[in-house]
Length: 278
Image (cartoon, rainbow, N blue to C red; front, side, top):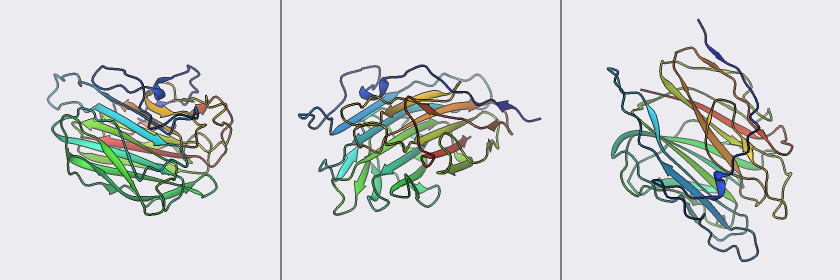
């Protein structure tokens, strides 16, 4: 029997995107300039201690997440997340990159020597002008102070860009996944999970052109029942986006999540939906 999690719009404003959270501390967000009132660089990170499981198989759980974004015109050839503590070995890491152009991305790396494989060839959105890619590292090395970096191609150092990282402890594989750049809030078709006790992660990249540096507050609201990891509000020309996750206790769970935003969203934003399993 298929379990259905109904799509709902969540209207509770979430404002964690401008703060760095790592190991329980919340200093102000990092910025490399901001003299004009527009932050050149925003970033955040959070580490968790997954709850112990009494079952025979350790439950998978999100152990850490991080994001970083730079505004257009910022000379930043390498965009890096803040450091965050992660499991020393064996986690599965998902990394989404949003970039001003499909040509912006040269490579993806971290400071622990892991390699990252694309889940699918890079996609385009926002009238095919922006690029979006999703990468996975399985059985990844981690530890204290782990960070991830987007290396921009030569000549693209001033491009706007963002990257979003979700670290899942106890996970080994990618199950079902989907991508859409034709619907404003969701996938073309629902996703059906392949395993019990999996975690499904959603990465959203809106294309709405509805904000500006003078009016940057355009928060994105995760689907009801999902945990919002982080976001950078649209408005600073940063290829803004957001990410969230939900646990699916049973195989063949059907998920059709819908994001929403404070302001209008064009139909050619992007959404990745990825199941992570033991």
